[in-house]
Length: 443
Image 1: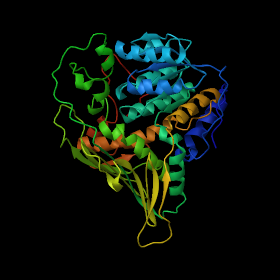
Image 2: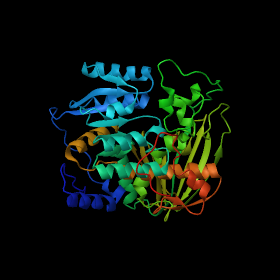
Image 3: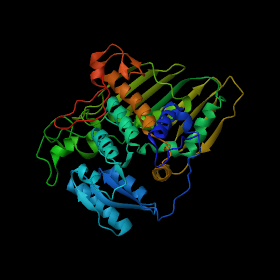
Image 4: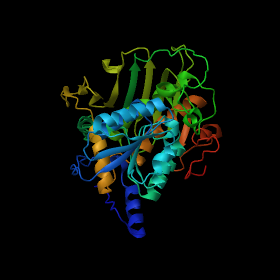
């Protein structure tokens, strides 16, 4: 049952609601129905877009499918990206939004109720925190942030300022994945001691070794870098390919891993990992990217083992699926991706029937609809920041283990690696002055 979150709260009622939300089972809340009723179009929600790349325009397009959504302003340090988003608004709404480079210009506008944060990962935390301080609700793309500590700061900002915040990993709003995870939780697979997620992606190709150069015209490159270290401009570190550089993102581990590991945690429960070990490197791609093209990460949870693996340049993955997830139980195995799910019967058992179930529609419209409904009702969304933080933390730990080349023991209560200063330096961000992130936990 969702915790009520009225629009206006006394301090006592707010603290009571916050405590109930914090102590409720995170993934258990997701078992509640998420199909909230649509609000009438007269209840306008004005959304500002921060980050106008492919994900930003994709999210905005879905937001604008909802008749009560307007978009008065779009923001990107690259004028060409902002122009593309503005053209989308003109197409969908016959309105001309303001275009700005600095996200602070979005937050200072009184006619913005909520923001979409669809920037590179290193820019997720600060706009989200500052939006909460400015009284805006936030739909932020995955992973929640570049580091674990930033995610905790985002949760604290949302709590203090009573904001509705949702992470955009939309499969939590999919009836297909809901049905599959309910099957796992029904114990019909028997004891599930191993779960796996994998991404074998043949569409990822080498990006080459272009030289450093001047930024393109119309780009505020210093603002694009923001809190990240100052580097010479290189076209491979910009826009889509930022994913493959540690300054801005975490490679496939956080780009795809957050989506897929999230389903495994949904099925298995909210208990955090105890330890993690990871191996991999750049074995295939000849280019100037930094994150591994091959990686296997093994997590020790209290009652099961979780394995993540990815490989680029090939598309033949486990169970003959290029990507997916598997729950391996004593009575059978459940395998799933967007095309659907199936039950594989354990050969020596006869308790399960081998069966296939089709996939469903794109869940992003339902995920965004849930956010909009919660903006109005002030109910917690299907994927509050606590849930986004949990799965993002798991993905980040895999990368920290890989980069330190050590087995890491994880203290979930303190959100620190046990006895490893080098690893803990990767838990907390190092912001380039003058940028500072409020609410960072003390190490």
